[in-house]
Length: 194
Image (cartoon, rainbow, N blue to C red; front, side):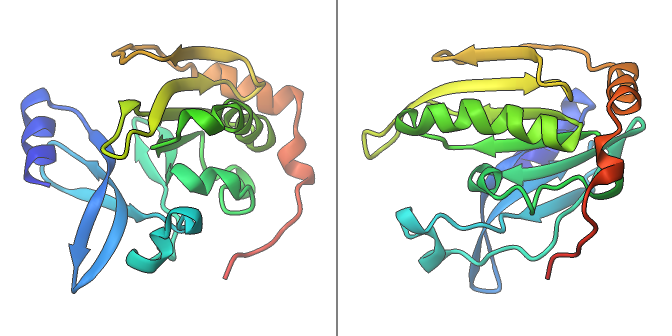
């Protein structure tokens, strides 16, 4: 947390990502949105990956969050959450950008490449998925595949296999135009999540 704060402060920008946090003797897979002034917002991963026994060690989150920066409403999520479209549903057009940080292994990369565009199209929002690259300590290979997809499903950015640092600009008019020309969210079911 201190590193996130110092980096955010020194670069005068928001730094965001997920890490393991211990709080009151409970473990959380937590997304932290750190501002340069040291204030932060947190999202605890809701869907714990039972196949890897994550559910035995971590406490699931209960709340979705939306942060606003420069007029953009952003909804952060973590990895396995992407498989649960109800949890990421853009109810009432609450967010403009959905962001997933992930440790998504290469052996399931086809799912990653499919689910990110699906979340963008069904939620009429930009979706950014940031995935790791390389082998972990268990010799599991992660092939990256970080990407940004437009509300219409178009690829804004895609980078498989290699680490990368890339800057692109999202245009509010593209989001507004997609929602105006295809007002699908207006026909969505109304529901709440317990």
